[in-house]
Amino acid sequence: MTFDWLKRYVPRGIYGRAALILILPVVVVQLVVSVVFIQRHFEGVTTQMTRTISDELVLVARADGAERAVIAQALGFDVVKILQRDIPRSDRRRWYDLSGVSVISTMRRLVPQLRAVDLPDDNVVRVYLVADTPLEVSFNRARVSATNPHQLFVNMVFFGALMTLVAYIYLRNQLRPITRLATAAEAFGKGQTVPYRPGGATEVRAAGQAFLAMRNRIERQIEQRTLMLSGVSHDLRTPLTRLKLGLSLLDDEDREPMERDVEEMQRMIEEFLAFARGAAAESVEDVDPLTFVSAIVADAARGGESVSLFAADGEGTLRLRPGAMRRAVENLIGNAVRYGTRADVSVLLSERALRIRVEDDGPGIPADQRETAIRPFSRLEPARNQNRGSGVGLGLAIATDIARTHGGSLRLSTSDRLGGLQADIVIAR
Image 1 (cartoon, rainbow, N blue to C red):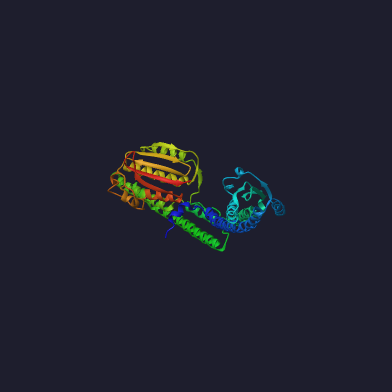
Image 2 (image 1 turned 90 degrees about the vertical axis):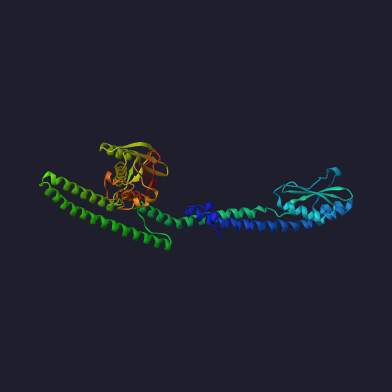
């Protein structure tokens, strides 16, 4: 048996689910108690009290004129002679008068002279009898129904709501450390480090301590990798500089091909370092995405690349790492103009997400190779023409890594406008 159909009706947040777990049993218990109370009270107590009144009504109906007046006065009845046409044709009660059902059914079963029962309100009962003459017998409603039956319901609702409120406040204090842990973990997944101190129950504290230990290990690894890459960068650039100086002494015919090789080596080293450095070390800032991307496109166009910003919609700021995001967008633009003749960039900032889209008119990437394309050092020669410019297969991998450090993703598809590759950086707000 599966309860998948029930998931759509269950709250998604932990506060909503905790409130449901807390409130649902209280409501069910109150409903069960209410039903049992109604059954016992209105069908038990009311029936027993109505039996006594029914015996007294039979006694009044069987007595003669003088004796009837004495009996009615002794029993507290108000007996009035009426005409036959004044007797109601049917019993009357309010639709929500549950005790009235038991009163009427019991009287009809025990009083043969009964013709109709009128229950207009909670104060009086009018019974119409036919003996030697039609009679209207009136008496207090309290003689057939218990007084103030609603008090139990009022007490149940009031104290149930009060205890639920107290329990919810306590439960919220217990859930707060879990939400703080989730916030810290989500922020760290986006590359942000927010202050966090474990608290709450023992299990929550243990999970918090494990998270802090994991975060510290990852930060140490990032720091060690950054230091190592700084040393590698320094060590590699020194021999490359010596090579350039040595090549400058050669003839132009021999020097130019070798200088191109050295420049290619230097560019490859820069790409390796950019990929390995990542974006986690950069600080986060509030950035206006529309202005930010517009500046990147303007710089690329000024550098001679065929790129344009054809759409920009939305307003507001988003917390980004400007340097890393610039590198990601520039990589996508560089890929677009390398494998196509033009690149169109668009920005959409909605209430839920930021989307930066780069489209080209190149050959694109087949759907079955897109997962491979975002892996480091992957080059798809059949789909992307290597004669248009060689790379080391890190452009899309760097963009993917930067998008993930911002808590987003890089999505590849086919451009409907240009027919080439469409690359979307999507980051949730």
